[in-house]
Length: 169
Image 1 (spheres, rainbow, N blue to C red):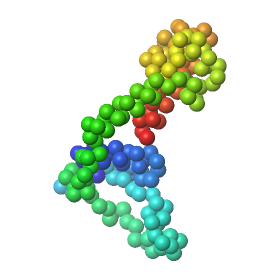
Image 2 (image 1 turned 120 degrees about the horizontal axis):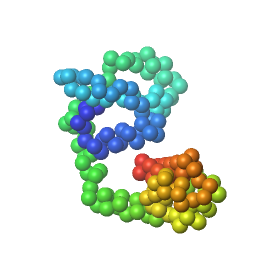
Image 3 (image 1 turned 180 degrees about the vertical axis):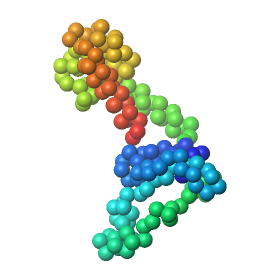
């Protein structure tokens, strides 16, 4: 995959990597015409699951696998056509609305926090994920009695993890 391929394609590959369908093997690989890119592999099970008889086809498929045989997708490959439609202004507006709705949610939805931590945050006036995200670890330590650096970091990480999980799909 060429390093200058469309952003929508890169994001799709990142999500497939996150879900475990593909794996990034090498980055900054020199391919044809000395162009830089990233090499991905599709998981073996995902490939043979497409067959009508995966068990029977597996041995033959395995014999034909080679690291020397892989397709290259340059920066203007025909497979990218239509990827620009994925990122439209309408989608960006919808994304902002959904992100704002997540930020307005109560801290009660944060599964990484204990009941005690949630109660302490509420007593300090931190009711939403946005409030928690806006506070620094130092401000949490100052505002909440019994919260030191370790607990403050756990609380901040819970908000960040929730946001990142939401953003990554």
